[in-house]
Length: 432
Image 1 (cartoon, rainbow, N blue to C red):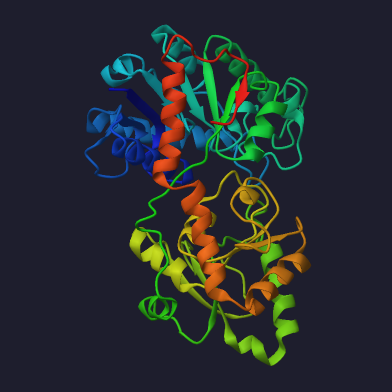
Image 2 (cartoon, one colour):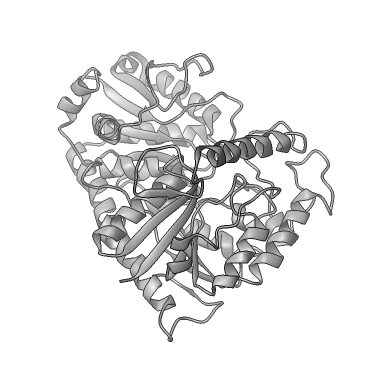
């Protein structure tokens, strides 16, 4: 039986953690001996292991994570673009499940987990390494979100996120550390989106590596369409209102999430609707509090953080459309979850979102950074004549491309290719 061990910093905390756990379950259903080991474990799932074998090691790991993130603030400008340094890490090569695995599958390994030094140690095991890139950090000098910066195509340096940016700044030093480590490793990259695949090809660190485009998956038996009226009533929403749903809405200053564009587009929509604006309601989930949120032009309901997937799926199913104004995203789960529940998506044409949203088919792809275009998308979905058709097309997109069985099969095909004598040569690129 094929043995795969997944390494991730956290268990289900964030999109990468959820993607790792969902892939693990999908592989288990296909009779693969698949296991997860995390740097820091939040949950109580006994099947997910951790390198912290006692409470003291767990507290120490938590301290190092917090300390590294606090120390980073001394070097970074006060912007909300995530950046990881490579000061701390841990060795994983002596763990029995890592030693016995046929495939080592890396996911998100920052926050003092696998820095370049400890990544390089994996070469001693002489095993194929698969690495799913959930953001850009693996092929940059530290940032997770690049926006328009192209320094990663050279050797970083002059990083706009650092206080003391220079040609030989911390971003270039990290780039050098990563480059030295990667030269020792047989890394096979999984890019969940076509956007990520193209980004990797342009990078100076990973451009010549084997790249396979395989999307993430989700639980299609949980995230599924429900009776719209009943779902609204279950969520405590007015069944006669047109519901726009959106995810975690931070302050206006958070550039990555595009909050200001959403606010501007909603203001414009209210002006255009006139008296009919009373028929619209905005629902926000994932907000940690209601003290640092913008003033929305429509009646707004804040649901807070939803940790129960069935309750979250009901919210998606209750909505008439999902709004995501993100300016850069790999393959955001909120989009996939919404479509799986039969709810169309309005988003900017950016990142991996076009891999999921087909314009005027299961949603609307707005012109990048255009509030007017985002408003046009909202008007399109409000006036769409056949809502049931739109719901069916949204669900079909997920079942055809992102269902568990399909995504698991693509990973298994890659694993088998890497564990047979006729494995593909390093440096090729293929869609699996």
